[in-house]
Structures are given as C-alpha cells and as structure tokens.
Image (cartoon, rainbow, N blue to C red; front, side, top):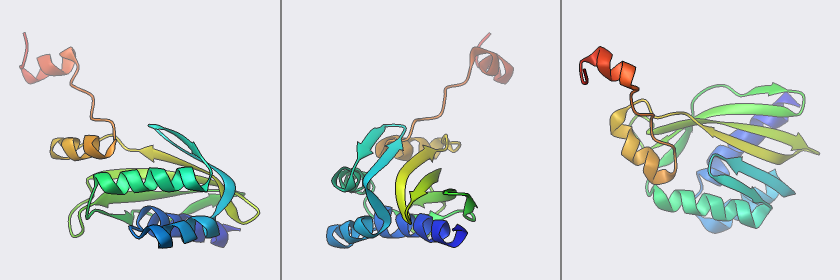
Length: 151
C-alpha cells in the first residue's frame, strides 16, 4: 500500500496540480481520484472531479509559469499519506510551501487535504497572497517593543 500511496501523492502533485494542459490534467484526475473525491484547503472545499479541476485551473491561472516540486519523502500509514511540496518560479526557491494529505479508497484518492505553510519570507508574502495563501501574522506589540519599533 505504501507504494500506491507514494505514487498517488507524487502523481497528484505533478500530473494534476502541476499540469497546465486541461485535457491531460482531467485524464490524470480520472485515473487518480475517486469520483466523489473531497478536496479541502484553507480556502474551501470541492467535491468531485469537475470541482477539483476548477480549483486547480484557478490556482494555476493565478501563478503563470510557476511549478510544483516535491520537498520531502512521502510518508504513509495504512490508507493515508502525506507529501511536502514547494511552488514557485522554476529555478528559484519556492515562494509557497505546503503539505498534501490523502486518504485512499480502493486504490484511488478519496480525500485530499492541502495545508499551506505560513510565509516566512516577507518578499514572498505578496506572491503567497496572490495565489491564496494566508499572509504572515503581523508582529505583536510585544515583538514590536522588543525591536524598538514602539514604546
């Protein structure tokens, strides 16, 4: 089962979320996902192949030229797995990072949960907001006082 989960996670990242050709992406969605798949991220929830495809299309439209890359090994437990990833312009450090968690049913992804890491690089904040990631929290008054910004 670990090999199946590793393949599903990696193919999802590269062949679904990383695929800009709609026909190829839809074929990959049909191959990898259960018909009633649930996709959830910090911005909402989508159910089914068509809804998942719309979410991916919208994300890729907000980040032209950017690509996904694997950022760590797949970890699997029973019918679940996770994979860390980065997203940004090719040849540059990722501007956005996160983690995909899947639940597998009958060899297909039944649920995909995407977690976005907080932006730690201020320069990446605008890019992260553009593609839908939450911006970093502003410093607390205590942190501002420690830096000498406020009395």
